[in-house]
Image (cartoon, rainbow, N blue to C red):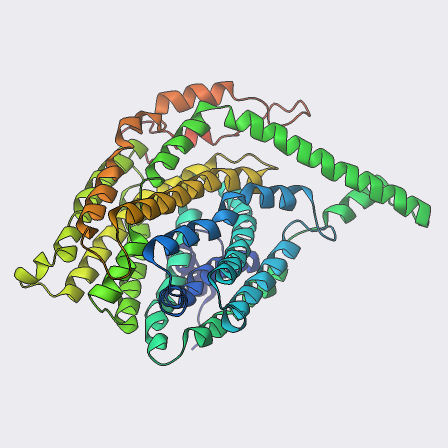
Length: 497
C-alpha cells in the first residue's frame, strides 16, 4: 500500500520538529551535527588518558591538574583561529580547509599517544595537539551555528544551540560505557589508536559544508575577463589586501562589541563563575586508588553523566526558556553547591555507615550534579551566540568562549595549588574533605555579581546605543535584532535566551 504524500509530509514535519528541534534538515546541518557528534565520541579516549597519566607516567593529582590546564591553552586562544577562519581563507575557502586540517591534527595527536609518547612533556604536547584540533573545528562549526542562529525566529530561539549540545552529549553517550569497558580488555595505547580514526570523520564531512570560494567570487565580481599572469598576480595582491582589510574590520567590530557593557559584564561574570578551584583531578585519584573503582564502572559513571547532559538539555529547552538568566544562574549555583557538599559523605566514608554503597552513591550524585551543570551552561551558549554580529561570527563567539575557557584553566591551576598545599597525593587523601569544602563554597563567590547578567531594561538601552556594524554606513545595528531577543518582555511571553 502506497504511503500518501501528505503522510510522508507529516512524518518529515514530525522528524524536523521532534528530532531537529524545528531546524530544517540538510546536508550542511548533518555535517555540523556530525562534527559535534565526533566531539562527544572523542570521550572514548578520555578515561584512557587519565589512567595513562596516573599509572604509566606516574603523575600526581596536582601534576595532572597542571597538565590539564596547559593543554587547554588552545581553547583560550580560540579568537586567533576565528581571525584565521574569517580573514585568511585557504584556497579561497574559510571553513572547509580548516576542518580538514583539524581532523588530521587530531588523528596525529592520538596516534602519537599510542606510539611515541613516554614522558610527561611528550604527553602534554600530544594532548595539547588534540586539544588544538578540537578547538579549531569547534570555532569553525560554532561560526556556522551562529550564522544560522542569527536568522532564527523568536519561537525557535535557542533550538539550534540545544540541538548541537544535545548532539555532543549523544556522542558522549555512545562511547561513555565503552571508554571504561575497553580498558578492561585493551591497553590505553590500543584505545588511543581506536580513537585516532574519529577525527578523520571531521575531515570527511567538511566537504558537505555549503561554501562559495571567497577569492573566486571576488575575482569574478571585480575582473571577470582577466587572463594574463600579470593580471593574475595583480588580482592576488588585491585579494590579499582584501583579506587584511577584513581582519582590520573584524578588529574594529570586536572593539565596538567588547566596549558594550551588555557583552563584557556577563562575560566577566562567567569567568568568575568558572574560575573557582576544581577538585576533579584529586577526585579521580581518590575513586581509583582509595575506593578502587575499576575502569568498567567509571565507564558506567560516564554513561550516566552523558545521559544526564541530555536530560539537562531537554529540561532547559522544555521548561526553562521563560526563566531569566539571573534566576537560572543564582539557583543553579546554590543548588549545585549544596549537592556538591554531599561528596563529603563519600570522602569521609560516612555513606558506608549509612548503608549506602560507594558505587551507588557515586552514580546518583554524578547524575544530579551533571543535570544541574548542563542547565546552568545552556544559557551561556545561547547568549554568546546571540551577541555575534555578521561577518565576525567565528571570532567574537570564540572570544567569548575563550574567556570562559580561561576561567576553567584558572580553576584547574587553583585546584592544583590547593592539592599541593593540602598535601593530597596519589596515596594521601586525609585532607580530601577540606578540598571538597573549599571547592564547593568557592562556587558561591560569583553570587554578589549576579547583577552583571542582562535584564530587559539594560539590554533594551544597550540595543539602542550600539554602534554600526560596519564602516559602510549601513543603518543596521551592530547586533541586529539580537538584543531584544534576550529580554523578558511580558510574563506570559516566551523568553528568547
